[in-house]
Image (cartoon, rainbow over all chains, first blue to last red; front, top):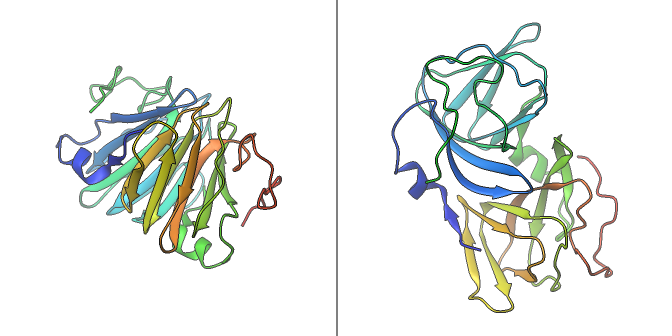
Length: 120
Length: 120
């Protein structure tokens, strides 16, 4: 029952594409991440993924659809099974809500993959 | 895969304490609500509830703990089984993520209860 201040949490880390957990509910984690540059193409076979953009503009490529642009104050759900590639021009702060089992790189395990995200 | 703009969605309704659905994921709904004044004491026996404050300051009373203050840019998880009473001084805009089965008035059914929230 403790209020979580997003600005304070974001101040605690600087890495890009590295999600940190700030809350849990109903077997989901709420995670924060800073994004910059281009991520890998991936999908989540079993989990929809909620992107809430807190700062900046997130771009999301899809294989067969136009790129989505998600600005601060906007949200995007990427349904399970849909390949996507997030990228940005500058730094973007996002909040994610997703099942505890979700790996941020989905079906792809790469150098950037964080298998056990930490709480901050 | 459509970007959802919160400001545009909030502009579509004016009622207080009436949640509207804007997205779904993993058997959860993402809902928006405008809050003003005092709500009823209630709890959710099976569901944790995530409050994301988009605008204004949400106050949350608990039976045995200090009142939580949740400002824009802050979030609060109310664990299942915990009685709570949201209230505000002015209008507050919140985004909620909760299982589809969650009734906003929890174990209490009152005049304000919206049993089948609509999509906007």
